[in-house]
Image (cartoon, rainbow, N blue to C red; front, side, top):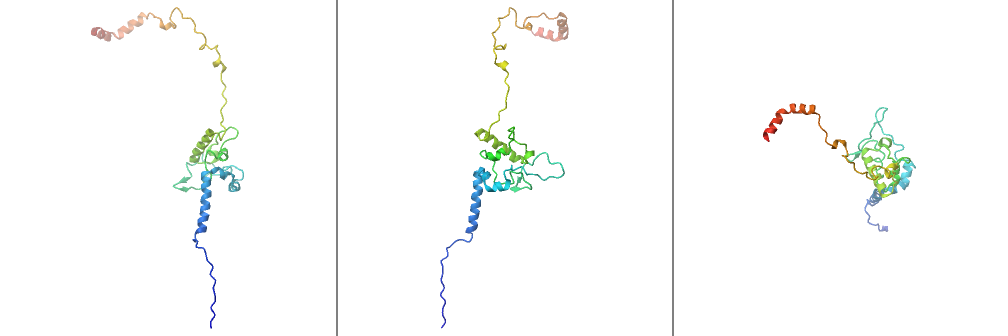
Length: 211
């Protein structure tokens, strides 16, 4: 007689094979969407600190170029046809950096702390497309009060606010004659009148004939 072996079956949950992959993709998508909607959170994340370490994002950027002299202008854009070109600018190379008017920590890296002027793109290496978006974000941040507005000091001339100026003093009494000498009738030079009559003699005859 042959003894039959008893097998014990354990119920296995019916899970799809790609559930783990979908979970990982969902987590990555949630992280990217969070930084896309709130890019200022990326500035405080550990990933940002490990990558930039308290430095500006353009501090260690060097653009590849031919010859010893660097180009005088940055490229127009780093993304053409949905593809990133080689050696992209500091903003285009990190897709998690978002130019938003509430992302103050990122905007302050492109403003001189002494003068309040935005750095030139030749200094930061930012492409022209991102430079326009950067200036727009800085302007909106200044309008919303997230960045201080630098107002230039203007020296006002005190002479314009005094009563001693001739424009705000009492009006003088009128003169007996005209205000200006060329208002009064002046007898023309007879030689000049004779010359003009001789010059326009045929026209004067026609005018007199028409009358």
